[in-house]
Length: 396
Length: 151
Image (tube, rainbow over all chains, first blue to last red):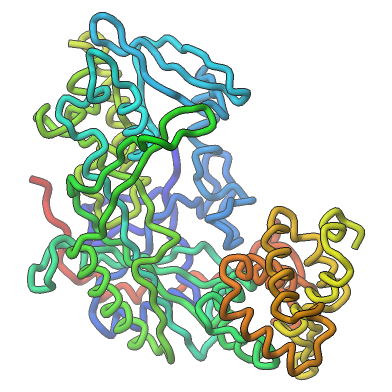
């Protein structure tokens, strides 16, 4: 469906064959590899949901460099050009700008549908034989908690008391080096290579689990200026131009995606006062960065600095945790076989409500030190297959 | 410069904003680039204020309050002092204004050319990026597997 580019043979993963050739290494990648190979550390071209050859009607990547703000070429496999068109062709009706208030249940304790507000604030009831939630760890928990009733006083699907608990994010460190040589800058997809040298647990490091380095290529002319000014490397006045030319196309680096662990005190609850514009109680988030994650971030910054210095960086900058990213929402409706310790069973069905399924990041039991979208997709497809294979006994 | 956004600013505020933009990014003969107060760039700034108008006005009001008169009417030395204070205390509103100025400056054709860039959008022509030498992976290929087997 998505189409993945990459290169076979990565020793960090079981054998698999990517569908398309890898994204180009470019000047930035080659520079970073110089450092990684000097240190003898793992790296590999990233698996990327970016078409490097024509794929199912999508044109190949032409290195526009604007992956995160939308791909004009259609090479990036965002769901608006992959899953949604296929689903709509198959008969799915997509209702946009709607907001679900609650899942209703019938006298048998089964989900009977949802109450939602449309864009004009008009309330509707949508009856359903099966309800599937895909609202991620804040939205899913919020709806379940807002669906409390006499039969389910602690919220729907919450006999374990774990709905809204174990909220996880991805603490990110960002590290960048400034080089004398010209690098890719604005050209090419943001990602090119990754390293999982520090992914698995090594207790001598002072923390459990680990992180992935995802290397980025560079910045476009505006971003180089905005970010340069934000971090105090780009002055006002006559020195501006000279300083800018040392930043633009001379910077590359990485983020470290740290594996946050489940802790029950990190929660999504309902705010007792705050409501949205439809009057639906708002979610309230309590989260404390753990000492384990803090140590992981420190380790990542230190190792990344070694990579960049070994690659020839004249100067290194870092920020950890970054404030604007890594807010992947996971863990608040965990998957498991024990109804006392999990919200959904091993194929995504609520332990308590047998026609209610969850297919988003809330069912994660740990965050993994990688971006979560591919795992969410894999779980959603797995749950969908499970439903399909069990149609005759789905509600048993 | 006849946009709705221009109408939100008084003539004094427009002069002060232009003055501030020129102080942020002055012209450079060495690099052959205009200042951010250049007619075309400043026009783009005014057109681009859009939803951030509230922040821009906050900055300009702060600037005039610090100055005790329209900022643009100060002598250059006093402007430097006030601008330095603004940088210290301008906070989020100044960050919004700074982004607008930088965005408009670094998409100007003359500025892009001075940086060696073609003054064009990335799409539809795209850019060339060298594929690279995948033999650099040889030492990694020689390593044993790093992953854990599933239980």
